[in-house]
Image (cartoon, rainbow over all chains, first blue to last red; front, side, top):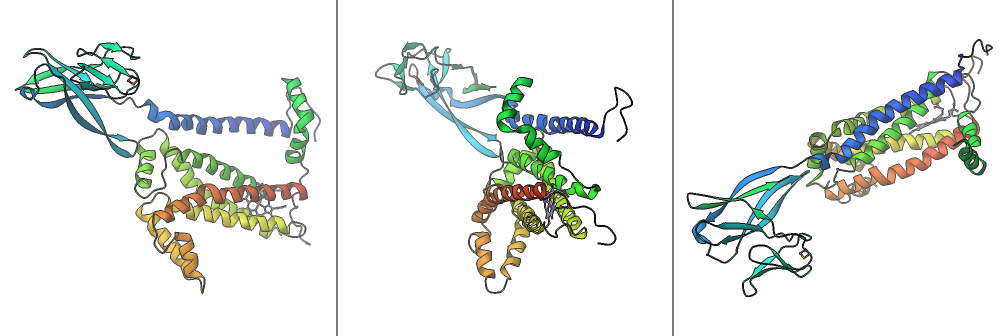
Length: 164
Length: 218
Ligand code: HEM
Ligand code: FES
């Protein structure tokens, strides 16, 4: 071993430690950061949906009674194609005024159903009720039922599905 | 910080471990002696990237291929993680084998290191086993037929061949059962055995020290 020649002299061990720390950090970052991104990337994909769903002839919906229309949409979750079903209550009050409510309870996403004799949408999960305009009558839901935009073209009703 | 370390060191003996493991006396050696450490490093990389792959990979015939496709095309840096695991596997086999050759040609397997050699041979076989079981997992044409051939070869062993083939495949056919058990071997059984064996191997290397390069008269 040669004697220390100056204050900045580093010995073999010191050098090896520095090189290992340096290379180790680089490798850690090169694998670590992509690793994090690899893990969270499915969460970052904002899935956008913007579709007009045909919901049949307007005339087929009775006046004054909410009527359920069901449709399904397929989508890819990773490597799996799965279909998701949607329920829309269409309320036709007169020729002009049409409202389309989502049947998803605004509390914790159970499905509500219209009970004609009680004139209310009832949610089975935590005993909530919404009136015919979607307003909360009682129960835990924090706000009224969600509404879909609608349009009518050539006598066909369309529902605007927007997500993400 | 310094005090916290002192406190821990007094109880855990960290400095002693460091001195025993990394500040060992070694003879003057050459680059061939780095291959064991290189094998260890590559094996750890395989472990890390392999764990990452299991986040998305599904060992079932109806999803294996698609899940790998998703890793390659649907996930950020999936190509990198899988690429490292894919190429690292071959590199590990090569590195371990050259390490074995170095030990052989330097006569480093001799007394008192015979058992180190034996654990090394086990590690080499485990490395090949990891390669064999991992190759089936993508469930593409190549991996399917490679495993068909590999298990058929095992089946040609006299007497017990048919039995070995059925144990490997989990039945007579190469099926969903084969895929599931290859996966289990690949991620649980072989790595667990390999970790124990590496532990023993390194314990022996540290306990016995490294052999020197043989001189001309040896
Ligand atoms: C995953 C596989 C393996 C790992 C991680 C590994 C690791 C190591 C390490 C770090 C050393 C220290 C010296 C050096 O690097 O040359 C070593 C030495 C040794 N290895 Fe391995 N090894 C593996 C496979 C094998 C194989 C396949 C054999 C032989 C069949 C083997 C036989 C030995 C022997 C006999 C020594 C002592 C050499 C000496 O004292 O000069 N190892 N191993
Ligand atoms: S989910 Fe409907 S009341 Fe709780």
